[in-house]
Image (tube, rainbow, N blue to C red; front, side, top):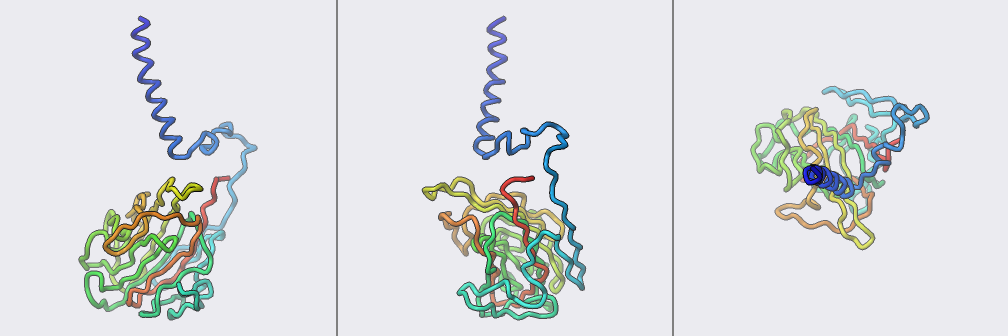
Length: 267
């Protein structure tokens, strides 16, 4: 009988050890999971109240949540600069701004870490070119990890280079592109990489992307900085860096850009 009990206990102990190991590797603790609070504890702090934003239409940009940081006010590029540090030279129109072909990438003046990012973009209509030479730009999280912007409507290119792909790494789960000239939306949840004091990678960056309301990147682990025809390794970086938009010589338009930093811990 004792032997049978012993044999039954072993799998339970092993399973518990495996779960503990996974939790430890993920960085979770019972406190982080909220287990220090009693169920329905009325002394537990409540989440802050915000006003949600309003969705955009084809003609008009929507409004951001009340706790978002607005990256474009619809009038000027005061929150942006050239990656060389000079004023951004992209064209500003009525409620949008447009890539200035040949003027170079632009980046936010401020730096951001883990975040929810909202970006709306539109490729030229009528379209010109094909493959990668058609409505090409990009959203670079931390200035290093590109979510591709491309006219992928009835335009064939390599899988990990089409719209909503993590460039050179992960194709989108589906092609959710609208026709050229129509406004498209990225809602992105990004967690940057973490390094120890010696510069060793502890946790890779992760990203979730919803393109036009469709999940296309499901919490994928970014392999390192994105680059053309190569996958360079991680190097130690700060937890906050500027957001960058790419000049790929195509007059892609952007509007209604806002960002919500994700706090270290919930309320």
